[in-house]
Length: 379
Image (cartoon, rainbow, N blue to C red):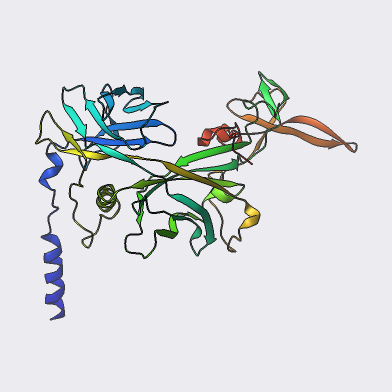
C-alpha cells in the first residue's frame, strides 16, 4: 500500500502542466492616469503610463500627451510635461466650490476625459507617532475630520535618512599626490549622505464604520531593524488627502490587485473602477483616478538615541565587505581613493610611507544613490 501511494503521488506531480493565462499575450496596452489637483499648493500633477504584460517589467511612461485642466466656466489650463509622462501646472487660481475636469489627448489620437471632481477640504493630521515592534519601528498617522469631510483618507510619504560611507576620506587625489579634503564643499564632503525615498504602497483609510471621524494609529510603514535608515537620523514627511467613497473604492481595489496576489487564497484580479474614460473609443479600457483636495502635512525626526535596537540586530548597510589596503608613495592610486596617510614608526616618530586606500563605493557615499547636500529641512 505504501509503495502504491508513493507512485501515485509522483504520477500526479508529474502530470501537472504550467498554466499560462491567455491574457498574458493579449493587448494590455491600457492608459493609466494618476492625477491630483492640490488645492493647498494650487498645483495639478498628472502621471501617464501604459499597462504592460505580466511577464514585462519597468514602467512604460506615456510622453507627448496634451493635458488640459478645465473648470466649470470652460476656462482651460494646459499642463507642461516636465519629464517623460509627468505633467504639471502651478500657480493655479482655484474656485473653492468649483468642479474640475481633466482632458487628455495622447499621441495615438485618442481622447480621454475625467468626471468633474469637487475640491475636498483638508482633514487635520493630529500627529505622526512611532513605536517599537518586534519587526522594527512602526510609524503611524493619527487624524480627525469634521462635518465637511468625507471620512475617507489617502496618504503618501517621503522618507529621508542620513548615512555614512565605510571610510571617512580626508584626502583628495590629484594625480599621484593628494590634498586635504574640504569638508565644506559638497563635492568633496563624500562621507555623509542623505537618501530620500517616496512611498510605494497604497495607503487609504476610512472612518465610515466609526462613531466619530477619527483615524488612530494607522500604520504607514514599519522600518525593519535590519534597515540602515535609523542608524544616524531618520525623517518622514506625511501628506494626507481627503478623498470620496468612489476614490476610496478605486484605491482599495487597486491595492488588492497589486499587493495581495500570489497565492490560491488571494482575490482574483479585476479592473478597478475609474473616473477616467476614453471618449474617442468608449470601449477602450482606461485605468486611473483624478481627484482634488486640500492637503495637510506633518514631518517627524527619529534619532538613534530615541530607539532601543534589540540585541543581536545588525543593520545591512551595503558596506559590510569594505576594507582598506596600503599604497606606498610612487605606486599610484589606480581606481582607489586615498583615505588617510599610512605611517610607520621610525625612532619614535610617525613617518608617512604611503596611503590607506579603498574602492570608491566604500568611500564615496553618493555611489549608493544619496546626495552629500544636506536637505534644507534637516535638523
